Length: 232
Image (cartoon, rainbow, N blue to C red):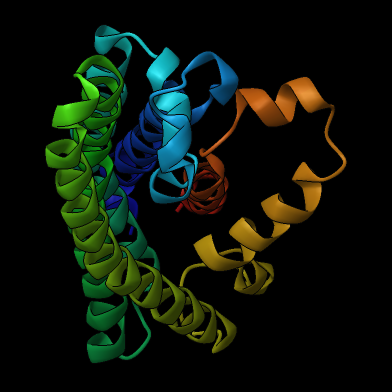
């Protein structure tokens, strides 16, 4: 592993940066508050929008950059999976490839899902801006959009749960370059930890990090893998 020490370090740092960019994108897209009483055209559709109504207060530029940062961060995630692949070396080759493949597939699907939130924001703005007689057209678009999100979100969650569990099993085998304590550090456990920690954070921090928990979990994950592989 000494011969690829520098690439290991760089790929780990790139992965952390990718997760950080993704988290910023999440915040730009989702960290907002709205009083629906101020938007009477949206109020009848509160159930349909399911919290997406808060995007009405976001500027188009904020939504654009919120979406693009996550999409552009995805290749950096992929660099991180190469880094994880190297760290798992020594364990069963097929199992290692499966873990990395599951994580990689989830990130590819995730880039699509993240980017579509920009369009959801545009739908919300359109729903508020058009006349009431035209709102039905936008409503149908939102309904179709939500179906697409459900279809893509479910596989992402399943893939990451399976990959996280499998990653920990491989680390626990003692055949990888990762220390045994890293068995407890994976995107799934860190997401659960974040949900617990978030409850005790000050309100302003909870509001500031709204929607970014998943990628904060990946930031911790890649930080730990990078630290543990830093010296080979």
